[in-house]
Image (cartoon, rainbow, N blue to C red; front, side, top):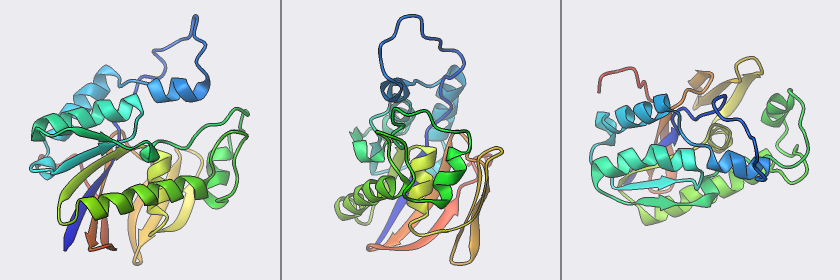
Amino acid sequence: MKTIIYLIRHAQPIKIELKNVNNNDDCQIQNEKQVLSLKGEKQALELSKKDIFKNIDSVYSSKYVRAIETAKYIASENNIPILIDERLGERKLGVEEKSKEFWLEQMYNENIKVIGGENQKEVRKRMIESIEDILKNEKGKKVAVVTHATAMTFLLMNWCKLENAILDGKKRKLSFNNKIVIDDSFNTPEVFELVFDDDIIYSIKRINLNKNS
């Protein structure tokens, strides 16, 4: 039985607009609380109007605020609740300052991490567990899953081959069954269509969000 999962990176968050004056939250909590920018809110609304998100059966989201704020539009459009799964969260940052090259290093080394953070293998494990539960509970349905760029990448690498990664622009080249899925940076938002036949993945396709549908 065919199940379709739309794997979605959240819309554009606020970054440079926020400055801490008196905030005791650590960097991980600040990351989890990061909200969408005004542009991101508009992007998320426009995303929810796409034809592919009509008649969605379920919407899952990480517990991060920017993911929930993206998911809320798709959920509202389909009059369904948002199902929160913390396993869909972004890679945990940790407490040790990392080098600029860490992003590239983690793409090729699944075990590298900073103190208190996660590595590629750990992120992929929890992401896969979440997807497996979704496939079990949502068999034969259309499901939207809102998550984050690095977590998405590590999940896709469970089925895709990493052909190349470039630090400048954080570009990644992934292929599935010898066909290129993405050779670019991730956009905000970004959407991949994953089609499963029972529990076996059948196809992975990057959705062109510039189309009118």
